[in-house]
Length: 54
Image 1 (cartoon, rainbow, N blue to C red):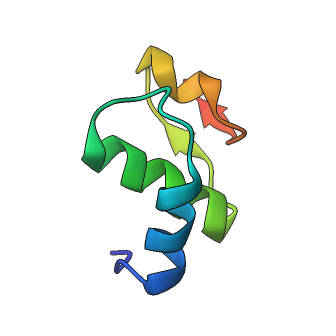
Image 2 (spheres, rainbow, N blue to C red):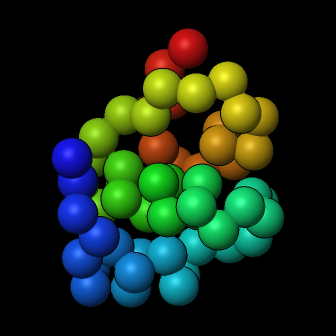
């Protein structure tokens, strides 16, 4: 379980709007801050500088 931190929300506010879903954008921000890969087939995730698996 990864709790939402102030750092995550700060990163979220800086993300471009390639993805419109707020929860998915939060997941992207957390992955970027924590240097974690994402596992998803959601197309807009690939527009961000995050390691995407699947």
